Length: 489
Image (tube, rainbow, N blue to C red; front, side, top):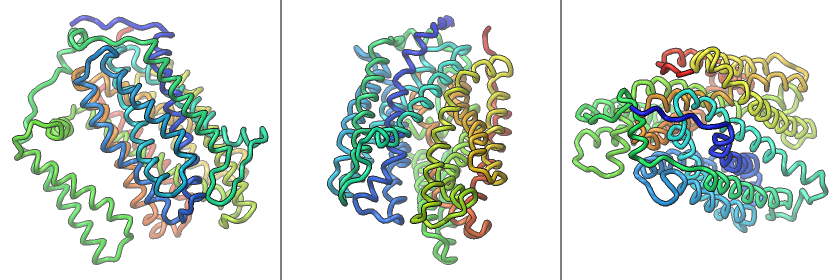
């Protein structure tokens, strides 16, 4: 095996710089799309159904893009053609979205925009694994976390800053305000420019060179799927039982989504064990069934981490407005002051994440990847739980320090641990499959958190944040089960 050469700081900077634009676009989407939907006439109850496009798009697109990028080689290399194509499509979507004349047009643009973000983003994870040796991967993924934090802070604050600069923040009924439109235009320019920088300033190893770097311990092997039907039966039975419980016990309709996911997964695994197909779906499902042991263990880490994150994103606004600002009426001044403060808190944790991304490589060198991730997740869990104990909203900024460290770590260290245990020939598809364990907890959170709040927590949203804090602690403990590759000094 040939040892992969180390890259300089600026080479790593260039290869990660495109993530600045991708996260800039994602942050604009996350902060403003609900506002666009409501402006175009969507009711509050309809917004979750319109948003379901985002996780479902990632669930479908990322494994496929990973599979294709593993098998691509051309003048632009292996991953960079997907960076460029995704960036061009996403930039166009950012230009069109704030000019949507009708709600259904905006909903369609969300599908296109999110799919384009995923086309550009998924190969970036594999790109770091391709280019960097084991001892530098924590640095590479931490650099991505740094750019994610910077992009999210600037994009989240951009409409607010434009409004203070005198740009109109209101508009006639059915028209998107100028602050949002100009922010989306800026996002398209930043996204395309940053990705073009990475495409122009980086090079890729050809497939034969990557194979020469391959560790025999992570090489590919034949996949035996004869027993995949057992997994299929298990998922199918769980889905049917949940469906029956929903119907006969009059459970929340949101749980239909979870039941449907279990049934579809069961049918796919049953099909896998009997099909003779050699097509793309068969290959992706086979890779999912035969994922490396380290990836199976990391899947639990991701599941509990992202369940906590979605609990935070969904319930921080109602929790803070009720607990720290004493308001639950969305029309009241106190509620809107609290909602604005939540925007500041979200910008703050992304800013702290950018700073944490500078510290995390030092932690990884001193303590290793597993212990570093455990510490960061415990800090995040403490940050979420502390929201229930604080009454002065300004002190919530301290809570966001812990959340920022957890966020930066979630975006970097699991990918460093994963890439150390993947064959180069399947780096892309496995990074895409790894996205399942981000999307599934999001869909689960959307399905069950409302039910749990109603049944167990008397409708008090702050308990969802405490549940998220406990979930981060569980994710940290699960990290200790992951085998860590020895890192060269």
